[in-house]
Image (tube, rainbow, N blue to C red):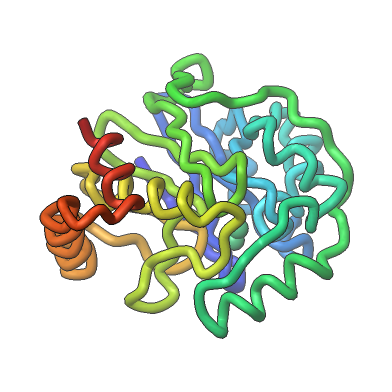
Length: 236
Ligand SMILES: [Zn+2]
Ligand SMILES: [Zn+2]
């Protein structure tokens, strides 16, 4: 079962198995206690962080202490806990430029050390939920998602539903970001859950349109478009 909780523009998710659940991401610090009150009776065994941006990790220490649960994230984003601007960000749109500035001037969150460092393919069964870690670098170096056997895809900020564009407005590495975005679009996910904005489901026209666009890209491979060749290689 998936439960979505929105705080301001941030989404957190509780992904539940039969007995236990994991929390995917936190929210800005001012919502820490509200988040705790909502999830405290949900048998949460793990806090999984999709990436190290402040709006996702700000309550990590607080929630981890209150619930006595470990924090898991990718090692490559660990540096962002103490230095939020350690990974240089670029912008895709005017909104992205504003977001970049926000990241640049962000203060570090309450310090914590992740208890578990996640890698691609890692299983989550020992925390009571069926699912696997899926590497989605680009938005940040250590961005990860979670893929479940029900084909639910939690993608953090590797996709953003704040307008029909869906692409992350800010990224650390453009090619990686494009690749991760392509992987999400081409997956057969029944539901895509993002860090910002409403979830989108299989029949969503935005995803259908993106798949069509990628089909066109595939056809232009003979024109030597490097980025799309990379994507095609990955697909094989
Ligand atoms: Zn982010
Ligand atoms: Zn975010």
